[in-house]
Structure formats: C-alpha cells, structure tokens
Image (cartoon, chains in turn brown, red):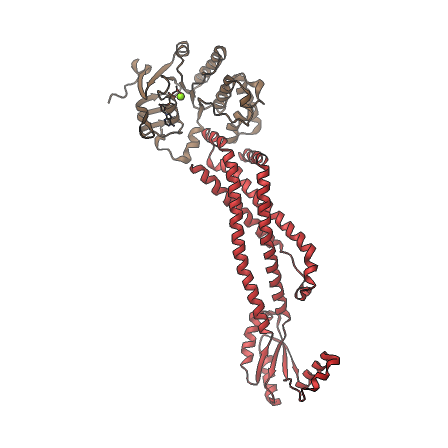
Length: 231
Length: 295
Ligand SMILES: Nc1ncnc2c1ncn2[C@@H]1O[C@H](COP(=O)(O)OP(=O)(O)OP(=O)(O)O)[C@@H](O)[C@H]1O
Ligand SMILES: [Mg+2]
C-alpha cells in the first residue's frame, strides 16, 4: 500500500530531515512512527500527503508514484487519506460541525448524509455536545478530537495521524485508541506518529523508529518480514 | 454538487467583506456611469446623422441658359437612375418666388439684386435604400459629372464637419472605455485579492483535505462577477435617471434632437455593458486567485 525507496528530504539545501528511508507498509497495517523531537516524523507524513516532495527516492501509494505526482492530481490523492495534523489546522471562524462537514461538502455528499455522518463521527470522539462551538473556545484536547473527527469522516483508506493523542487525557486517549483500532480492524491502514512509549506498549504494533532523519529500527524488519535498505 | 458549498463560501465572504465590496461597487459604478454618458451622447449623434440622411434634399443646380431640350435629356437621365424616386423641376422663377415668400416683409432686399440670380434646379428625392450618407455621396458624385449640371448640393460641408465630430467621439469612447475597463478590472482584482488573502488559511486547509483549485476559485469568481454586474446595473440605472431628468433640458436648445428626441441605450447595448462587465469581473478575480496560488 505504501512503499518508500531510498527516500531523502532536505530543507533549504542543508537541513537533512530524512535520509535513505526504505519502508514497506501493507494494506491494513497499524504502524507507529516514533523518535525524538526533530527526528523527521512529521516530514515523513508530509511526503505521503504531498505537502512536501522528496529530495530523492521514490514513494508509492497504492502503486502510484507520488514523488512525481502532478499538482492537479494531489487533491485526488488527499481524498483517499485522512490526516490528523500535529497543529490540528482547524478553521477558527467555523464551528466544530463546519470544520468536520466541509470535507464531505468538497466531495459533493448530499447535505442530509453529511449531517448524519458528522454527528455520528463527533459522537465517537465525544464532542457531540460542542458541535456549535468555535475551535478557540475548545480545550487543546477537544480541538485535537475535532481534527481526528475530520480526518476520519471520509472513511479514508489510509490514516496519517501526527501525535493525535498528544493533548488528550488518559481516559480519552484510551477511547481514541479503541476508535483507531476499530477503524484499523475495518481495513484502514494507519500511520501513527508518537513519542509516547507507554502508549506503544499498551497497544503493541509495528514500530518504525527514526532519529535525526535516519531509520533506526523497524520492528517488522527485525522480526524478518522485510529485508530492505541493505542492497 | 459542491456548487452549493462554494456558494455558501461566497456569501460568507461577501458578508465578511461587505464594506469593501460596496466601496468597490460604488467606484466601478461611477466609472461606468461616465462611460455610459459618452455612449449615450454617441448614440444620439448617430441618430441625428441618420435622421439627416433620411431628410436630406438633393438639389441639382443647372447651368445657366441650358436649352430646354438638354434639360429634358438631363431629367430623363436622372430619372433613369435606380436611386431616384422622384424629381421635381424648379425653374429659376419659381426659386425666386419661393425666396420672396420666405423673406416675407423683408422681400424688398431682393429688389436690390436687380436680375433674378437664382439658377434653375432639379430637386431629387432618393429611394429609401439610398437615403444615407454613402448613398447620397455616390449619387451626387455621378450626377455632378452629367452634362448641364452646375453643382449638386446636399449640405456637404455641414455634414462633413458633423461626421468628423462623430468619428472623434467614437475614438474618444474607445479610449475612455478602455481606460475605464482597465481601472475597473484593477479595482476588482484588488478587492478580490484582499478577500483571498483574508481566507488564505481556509484555502490552505481545504487544499490539504483534497479541495481542487478549480473548486476553491469559484467563490472568488462569483465575488468578482457580483461586483462587476452590480456596478454596471447601478450605473445604467443612474444613467437612465439622469436621462429621464435632463433630456428635455437638452432637447430644446439643440433643435437637432427635437425631431428624433434624445434616445436611451437600447436593451442590446445595456446587455452588452453588463455582459462585458461580467467578463471583466471573471478576469479580475481569476488573475487575483491565480496569483495567490503561485505564492
Ligand atoms: N519547513 C521546514 N523548513 C526547514 N526545516 C524544517 C522544516 N520542517 C521541518 N524542518 C526540520 O526538519 C527536521 C525534522 O522535522 P520534523 O518536523 O519532521 O520532526 P518531528 O519528528 O515531527 O519532530 P516533533 O516530534 O517535534 O514533531 C527538524 O530538524 C526540523 O527543524
Ligand atoms: Mg512532528
């Protein structure tokens, strides 16, 4: 589903955010991307939803090479993905409801369906009481859950979540993790960037560890699944 | 499909930037009003020229002492021309009588002339098809060369001056119209640019979840078109208002207009104005948005 071959990314010529990344992620997998701050987790995800282009190497999603994607094709790539941004990226003068519903509006869903689906998803993240609130009146954790609801409203094939539980209290974190696992069971591939080791050990999945832009360990690889990067 | 959503975004923008939009509409409407005034004057000058063409009398003055036989020959030749509808012979005596009657009690001035100085003439009425300037000029040119003709008169000098005026006016309208369109396009471009700028965050986020540029462009195109169409309709209304108030005021001193009356723009012309304004709106906002996408 997602394949990276010798991927590198440098910002402004000399800031190396990623180098020589080789990863294969199968459809339906749940993968943590971990590593210290500045390791390149966000950069890796940005390459996948084409907010940045790799400086070298190839990236394939569903067999399509997105390192050479044409600008006009990017929207259609993004419609297959759900992204929880590290900084949420909510629209401040829109209500919670509007912040989630516009994803479906853009795709041309009928309004009745939109309302039903948005309410359902907001209930899943326990925000159905706040649908008319504006983001800046919400706590950090509530804003984060709006971002999660928006990423999942379109039932994406792939979920890219950048520290999606960073602002949540333990109880809500549990609830959100159960939600993610459930979605994953229904077939959605999940890439989950986090540096919360406790979370990883309570929901053990494949872990890809980055440090200073390099791939340090891939739990899948050590268990013998893949043999990459040693050509 | 997503048009409903685009339309709601457009309404949201209008509400958020209401004053800016109103200001821009006001300025463009004023500029269009000026253009409209010029168009109105040009149209009326054209109308006058046309009316004149229809009413113009052609007078073919005959050489003095032309024998009757040659005169009959000439009349036959003129009558035979396809442009001619009617020919009336005015003898030099009749011309003299007419003048006398016209001068009424001041007829005594004629006595000072002694011998009747007026030449005999044919008054020619042209067929409707030829009662326009090119038709008249062509006819006058041909008849003027016939044997026995002294001169063909139809107020050439006057007409030439008048038509030069009309032509200058046309050029002026093109220049002013071009300038006004350019300025209005620039105003639209700028206001839409401000709206786009105020929505840059939303646009960026919508792109991140898969909105196409073509979709994101719609609300701004609508905004530009709204400004242009609103401004052109307002300007036409103001133009109509000033026309309704002042047409009698102008029609009286300028006798030229009193027959045709001062006309207003035709529905087709108004439609043209609104239509070209709409195109202008699309162009202005398109450039704005495209420019934004590049940065
Ligand atoms: N737009 C950018 N321009 C220049 N350098 C950048 C840019 N984005 C990221 N970087 C640099 O690339 C490196 C990787 O950044 P990235 O955001 O991917 O780290 P991260 O693993 O997500 O960190 P964190 O856990 O703090 O979110 C960092 O050194 C960062 O300074
Ligand atoms: Mg990050």
